[in-house]
Length: 460
Image 1 (cartoon, rainbow, N blue to C red):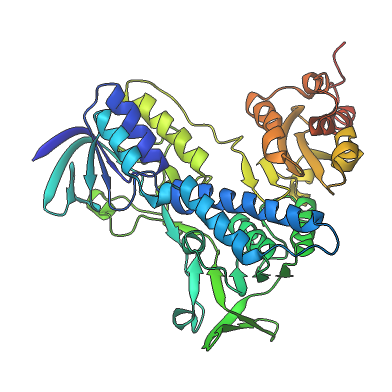
Image 2: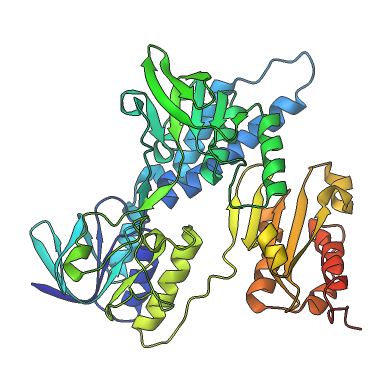
C-alpha cells in the first residue's frame, strides 16, 4: 500500500491549489480525480460562461450600433464564433497542461473516483492510498428538480449549456439565480427566445431587492420573458422540444429546458460514513474555522462540499487556509467579506449582508446612490445602476454593499476590504476617489451613513 502525507480527493479549484502548495513545500501528496483537473470552473462553468457573456455583449453592441438599412448581423454565425472562442478559453475541456504542471511539481495525480474504505485509507479502483491527513474537495453536482415528465424532455444542465455548440431557437430556464440570469442574457442576446422561471418573488434571491429589480429590468430589455413567483409543475416532451406547465396554469413551449436551480455538495458515495462523518440536509460537510471536519483531527474539507459561499474564490481561500495549517500554521478562515457577483451586462456585485427589515430593527442602517448621478455616467451613458451600502450603526462600520452597474464587480472590491478590515465609517468618508469614476458613488452614500451614525463624522 502506498502512503502519503496528504491524500486530496477531488481536483477542482481547491484540490488543485492545495496539492500544488503542499507538494512545493515538500509534502508527499496524492490528488485523486475522476474527471478533470481544475474542476468545473475552467471548463464548463466560470470561464466559458464569462466568455459567452462577453461575446453576447459584443454581438448586442453590433446589433445596436448598425447603420439603419444595413444587413442585420447573423446570430447563428455570431454564436458559432462565440463557441469557438469559448472553447479556446476553456482549453477545449482538456486538462492535460494543468495536470502536467501538477505532476512536475511532485503531485501524484491519480485518475479515478476515490472512496474512503476505512480510517486512513482511500481506494481508487483496486489501488489503496494510505494517508496521514485527508482533504475532501469533491465539489458539487447540479440539482435536478423533481418535476413530472422532466426525465423524458430535452434538458441541459448549466454545464451542458456551456459546452454545447447548438443554439436553440427557444429555451426555458428554470432558476433565477446567478447561473440562470447569466445564461438567460447569453441566449437572449444571441436571439434565442428565452423564458426564465423563478419560484421566488425576485431574481438572485439573496441579493438586495432593488438590485434584483434592476437586474430583472436589464434582462427584460434584452428580451427575456421573466416569470417570478412561478414554478414549473410538469413537463411533456413534444416533437419540437418540450411543453412546460406552470403553477399559474400557463404553458411554455421551448426547444430546450435548462436546469439552473442550484448545485448540491458532492458527498454521496465517497465513504464518509466509514469515518462516521455526517452531512447536513443539503449534503454539506461541517468544518471548523480551520477548515477541519468537525470531530476529525486529520480530515479537512474545502470548496463546495462545505456549503460555505460556494464560489471558486472561496474554494481557493479555504485551500490556502488548509495548506497553511497542514504546514504547521494556525490560520482561521473568515467569511465575513466573501464577494459575490453575477456577470451579466451590467454586472451585479455584493459583499457582506443586505439590510432586511429585521436587520434594520437590529441597528443596521442603509444608504444608496444612483450611478447615473456620477460624472462617469454622464460620459459613458445611463446605466440605471445603483450602489447600496449597509452599516452597523452601533459599531460604525460597513457590513454590506451591493451594486449593479458597469464594472461593479471590479470597483466594489473597495467595500470588500472595508468590511473585512472593519474600517470605521469616519475613515471611509475621508477616502478620495479618482474623478471621474463610478467609485465616486461611495462618497455620498458613506456621508449619509456617517451622518446617521454617531461618532463617525469625517476626520479633519
